[in-house]
Length: 341
Image (cartoon, rainbow, N blue to C red; front, side):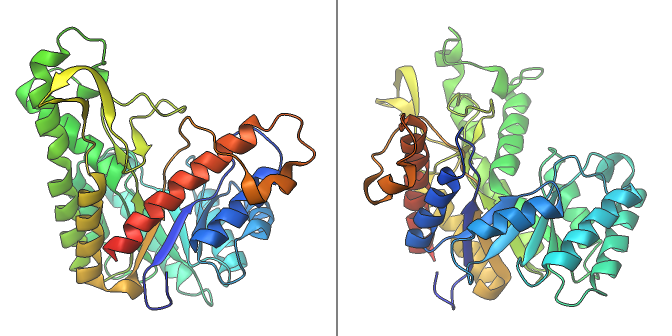
C-alpha cells in the first residue's frame, strides 16, 4: 500500500516442508506484492531470526506470539513484555490469542491485560498488543472485554473475521437444527441436499455479525488489526483440518446442484471482503487499520520462473512450486484488498 493507505500484510511462514529457500521465495514475492509480514514466533530469538527475511527494511511487520500463552501467568506476561522491549522499533504490533478465561475468570483476565497495558506504556516505542478473537467466545463478550480496556492505549483487538464468521454460522444453524453442529456436516452426507438452504443461510449471516463487531469496536477509535480469510463449514481444503483460512476467491464444490450451480459461496467472498475493508476504513481511517491475509496453503503448483535460482540445490522442486502457488494466492487476495481500499 502507499504511505497514505492502511498497512497490508500476510502470513509469512513456510507451512510447506523445505529449507530456508522457501523463506527467500516468500521475501521475493512479498516485495513484488508490496506486502508486509506477520511472523509467528515462539520466543524473541525466533523472531529475531525471522526478521532477517523481512521483505524490505521498511515493510510493516507484526509478531504473532505463541498460541499457548496464558496471560494469567506472570511469566507469560513477562514474555510479552520481553518481545515489546526488544522489537518495538521493528514491529508495530504483537498478536496474542484471547482465552476461555475471558468468560470464566473475567476479572482476573481483565486485570492481567490491564497489567500488560500499563507496563507497555512504560516501554519506549512499544508496539501495540492486539488480542485476537480466537477461542470462539460469544462475539459480544469479546467486544465487552475490549471496551473494558479502552483506557489502556497500548492494548486493542485483532478481529479475525473467519473465526467470528464460523462461530456465527454454527450459532445460526443450531437455532434451526438444535443439537446439530454445522461443522460436522460433510459433502458425502445424504441429508445435505435437504438442509443446504439452511446451511447457506447460516453461512450468509456471518458478514452481518462481523460488521457489527467492527462498528462497535470502531466507535472506540483505537487501532484495530484484522486477520482476513474466508471459510465455510463444509470446507476440507485446509491441510490443517480447519474450515476457514481460505482464499476469498474460492468456492466449495458439491456433488449436487444448488440454485443452478454445483458449488457454494463462502462466508464473505470478494464482495463481503470489500464491505469489511470499506467499513473499517470509514470508521477508523487508514492510519488506525492494519490488514493481514491469514490464508493457509491450498493444493496447487506454480512454476518458479524468476525464482528458480533459489532452488538450484533442490533435486525435487515440488514443494517449491507449491509454495510459489500459495504465494500467488496471497498476491491475488492482496489485489482484492487494494481494490477495496
